[in-house]
Length: 252
Image (cartoon, rainbow, N blue to C red):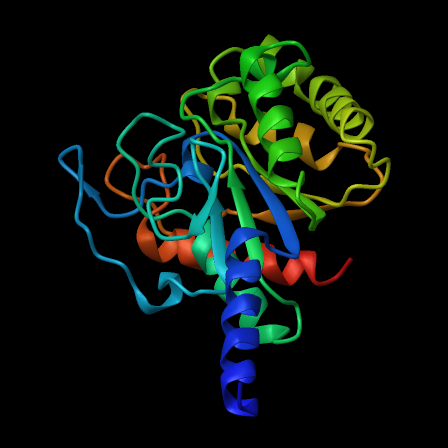
């Protein structure tokens, strides 16, 4: 075979390898604002995908059948089982690629489920077990787990006792995740809530800000645009948050 033919085979083989297994894996976990509600109108997604969230062969998604595929919004379509729209995940990945073109193929592992409380993410609970199992499955053929992106807490603002216990529960959650994934220094990027289902949002923010976890960075969602319900980020808000998450990760 001539050199051009061999080069073609090599390029195709490299592409297939990249599609099958990303080099950089990120967990997306939490509740609805991580799953994405941007672009929802009357309970349906408007199908509008902005430039910042466009698909790329260098961004893959670990789907509900435990297989890698090219990522596109809604990222949580077969995970959240609720109507999802634009979330921060695609903006995060596209921002990483733009700011670090050498990073390689990015793999996103959607695990967020809307309306969930921190207590539902405790070790041994279904959401926790599913996240750990999905993450391990995503890494079985190679790749490196780079970080956990976490956006949750709105459902813990209804009752003051939930808000006050959040700090200890989250710190234990991170300790358990790191132990079960055998990554004691796994980077974590947490979003401070800006809205919630109850009246203790400011108390929740204060408790989140008081969290003491090594290798943790926090980004503040306060001021990001919300949709009509004043709880969920709009498409514009989700895009901006994704960019903020990328900037925070790049500081590790």
